[in-house]
Structures are given as C-alpha cells and as structure tokens.
Amino acid sequence: MLTKRIIPCLDVDHGRVVKGKKFQNIQDVANPVELGRYYSEQGADELVFYDITATYEDRDIFINIVEKVAEAIRIPFTIGGGISKVEDFRKVLMAGADKVSVNSAAVMKPQLIKEAALKFGAQCVVLSIDAKKNNHGSWDVYVKGGRENTGIDAIEWAQRGQNLGAGEICINSIDSDGVKKGFDLELNKKLSDLLTIPIIASGGAGKMQDFADVLKVGADAALAASVFHYKEILISDLKNYLHNEKIPVRRV
Amino acid sequence: MPKVKIVDYGMGNILSVQRSFEHCGAEVDVVSEAKSILNADYLVLPGVGAFGNAMNELEKLDLIYPIQQFCKKGNPFLGICLGMQMMMDGSEEFGYSKGLGLIPGSVVQIENTTIDNESQKVPHVGWNEILVPHGKDSLLWNNSILNGIEENETMYFVHSYTAKPQEQFRLADSYYGGRRIAAVIKKDHLYGCQFHPEKSGTSGLKIIRNFIEL
Image (cartoon, rainbow over all chains, first blue to last red):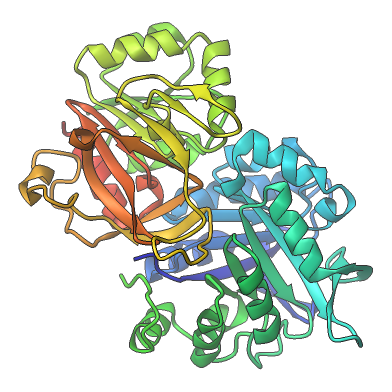
C-alpha cells in the first residue's frame, strides 16, 4: 500500500536555513546539510529545499549546498526557488535533486511546466502554488514569495498545471503559513477531490493532529518547517501517531 | 573493490546514484562512451525523465548498441526507474518509442482508476511495499539483489509509466490501486528497479550492496 508522506521543508537564504511567519520576519535556524541529514535519519519521507532569495549571485552557493545535502541524505530531494527555465531544472537535477518545484515563473510562462515535463518527465515537475483566500470564498494565486496577487484562481491554476504536465501540486496556504493553527482543510480537500495528481499540503502545521486532519481529507503528503526545525514534533513520534490514526505511513 | 560504471546521457540524478554506490563501497566511474561501457564490470543505467527523450539521448551518443552488447556478456546490469523501463521493448510515453529490448515486454501508462473504478492519482509517488509476485516462491529473492530484503519493506517510487514484463521476469511487485506494478525485474544478471534504491533509505542501500556483490 502506498504510504502518506511527511516532508520537512527547508527555506534557504544565503546558505542558511531560515524561517518566517506569513512569509515575513525571516530568522536564521540552522545549517542545511546538518538539518537535512538529521531529517533523513529520522525517517522523513522526502526533503524540500526552497531557495527563498534566489538571486543570481546566490545561485552558485545554493547549487553547492544542494550537492552537499544530496550527498548527506538517502531520501528524495525537491528543489525550488527561482527556477525560471528548463536549464535551471537540469542544473539542480544534476546537483542531486530528484524533483524541481516551480512557482512564480510558471505563472508568467505556463509552458515552462510542459517543456520541463517533456524533457525530464512529469514526475519531477512540482507546481508550487502560494494561495490566499479572497473575499469571495475562493483562493487567489500569489507570486514573488507571497508579495504579489495575480488575481488568478488557485484551483483553476492547479488544474491547468496538471493539464500542462505537472506531476504534483504543492499548495501553500499563505493565511496558514507559520501560524500553526492547522492546514487549510477546505482548500486541500477541494484540490484532492478535483485533481488526479498528488497534493502536498503546506502551511499551518502546529500539532500532530493537524497532519492527520489534512491527510484524511485527501492530501497525499504534508509539508512543514518550524514544528520540525524547533523539535516541537519529532518525525518518529508523528509517524507513530499517524499509524495509530490508521493512516498508512512508513516507519523506520 | 567492485568497479561500477554509471551511464551518463545527460538526464537524471547521476550524483545521488553515484554517491550511494560509493557509500556501499564501489569504485564509481560515470561514463558516456561506447568503449568504457563495453569493458565495464558492473553497469548501471539510471534515469529520470521521459522515455523517448532518454532513448534519443542514448542514440545521439551511440550508446544503444554498446549497452546491448554489454548485457550479452553476462555481467551485472541494473536499470533504475526510467533506466528499468528502457530495458523493455518499447514505451507508449508521448507516442511510441523503441527501448533497449533487453527484457520482453512494454511500458504503459499507469491507469488513473483503481480496479474498483475509483479515480486514483498518477504519478505513483511515494513509499510503497514490495512483495514476492503472487504464486512465486519467496526463495526467489535469495541470491538476487533482494537477498535479505523482507516482504513489505517500503521503497521510494516516482513514475507515471509502468513496465509490463513477461511473467517470468518479475522478481518483485508492488500494488497501486489494486493493480500490480513491476517493482523489480530480472533476467539472468540483468536487473531493473522501478523504485529508486538510492532514495530508499537503508533498504535501498542493501539492494545496492547486493548488486555489487553479484
């Protein structure tokens, strides 16, 4: 039986893991290589790295870290942040990534999803969507690290991403991010019901039950950062908890 | 020290594969020319990407014939993920493409419904259990790359297409939506893993160690 995945996420800025709240007040947390190795050994099912500044000068530092982390871990590794062309996919894949996550650039140029899927296979293209609820009861797509509202409907964009060849959708709820009040269950349920590709829920994890809740409404994986970074929840404890909740998980 | 050559044709996560083999005690060479493939002791064909694209890249580098020749020598060969799918006769991914023809069978898309006709997600992504194919003896795994692996151990899969080898070449299966996924295939010393042993934690490393001890 296919198990549900627990994915720690590392936001990397100038070579360090950082964490903010609602995409603001960014703080330094740890060395990405050490933290990556720790999660791999603790039974994380996957690791995600976002290069949150992704400026041209920092790109080489980041690739260097991707290589070092890839060397330290034995689980799948997704890279995102500043990926804007097919050549960027190739660079991070060659540095040891298994999947590549696209966000803003795909909104500007949706064909990027198709080109990358044709070249590297749909399974390595993750469409990451930053979504925020509007006053009409639906969700808007935000870009540029949550700073700019595109006015695009998040659900329609997710569907289009799937049609263009994305292999997974990572849905980040801006309202829930860093608040620790649980994942956006409504949004995750809607997407899980509608899409035929896996959904990774992101933003809002505070306690173990939050993970169970979002996996039960249909998400295939749950992603979190600070609850793991600050050891508020240990991955091994979380896996045991989910197992007791009758959610299939891999336990090491 | 076992000498392993990994075929680099410009696609895929060569680095992770290389690191895992080195971690398991192999001396690794990343190669992309005919001569070094033909005289390899152990040959590994990794792969992430689209089938037709990957075959085109192998063709551009003139590597199809050398890989086929290597596989006739009786030395151990391991195809990983797309590399395993390429061992088959052909694939229907983005139109029909011819494969390496090392193991009879074809590659088809994973169905988007379960056997109960409920919708299911494709790609098949995540950690899934591997099992001895129904009706086969579990002793089958001894003296193979699955030696010491327990049934139900989980491995990391990520794929939208699945190989359909003839029954006798199936060494391990997984189940997705009630249907079989060929997880490991075997013909003499030719092996293919649909999952990524280099990404499957300690279970995966065990498989790699078994391979370099063949």
